Length: 179
Image 1: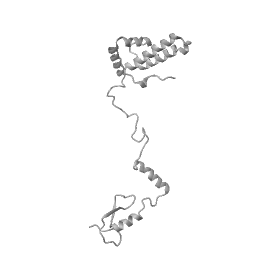
Image 2: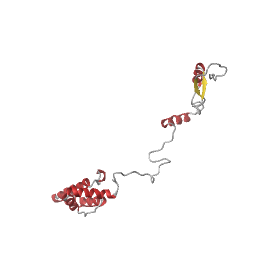
Image 3: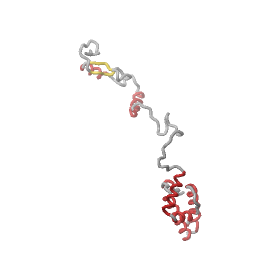
Image 4: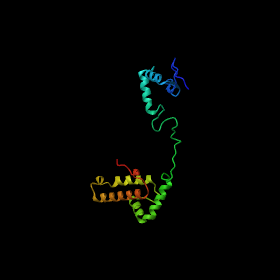
């Protein structure tokens, strides 16, 4: 039988109470009457300033564990970050494989789109973008006095570019932005 820790009390100590704020899992055992009195007097924030209390309450949001902004912190190293490209989307060879698949599916349509844009086999995404921007600037109707012929040419250029982007497995985010 555990005795009540209250001075002069001889009853059984059945109720735990923390010793201090620093030792919350180290208990003192009291009887029911004295644990009520201990709890009524005990102040967790006793001896702390208002600023310390506010800082403690703020730390409660993260369970008193350190936090960092995303992408920072002691373990973050951008040069160590790796990911597994299981679908090989980010390899240069992926672009080539997509081009070959499109060639096999479409036959003449791919060649026609490449001809409209003036591209040779083996072009890459950067070349496609560069050539598209160049042709749009050259054949834009506003720069050609509103010519119907320039407008029709621009439509064919846009269709060819859209076809190449869509059928070569490129994502929509790779399309050039208007400036």
